[in-house]
Length: 149
Image (cartoon, rainbow, N blue to C red):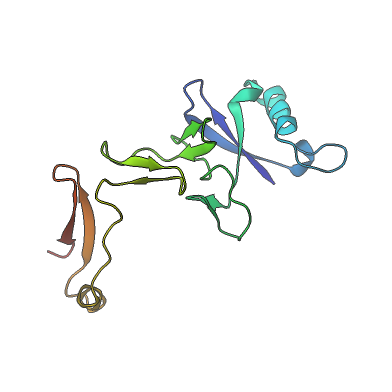
């Protein structure tokens, strides 16, 4: 089963369709993206160059079945196609966040979300608190919040 993202001229993902392998393979049984694109153009009245193959098993440039990651992320509606880097991007979560090409993910200016301390984990398990780090765009920092407060 192959998956293709239908994108707009502005590179926004409009939908994702799956195709039976027989519609994407050449006479030797090798999957070829352009064959799938031609099939989709013919049967969906949408230009072939606006159908981009995507991998159902790829997320943040990791293949979940230990295969070869393909195009950064599995495309979803409202993602953006970056043809230069060959990556499908989630919508940018905050204006200050930037693209990390190597992980096909957005990163905050303060780095990764901090880890919970053992005390915070224990309190969450005991249900006396429910700790979470939330991004604060105004201060450009991670704020620790108690969801039970």
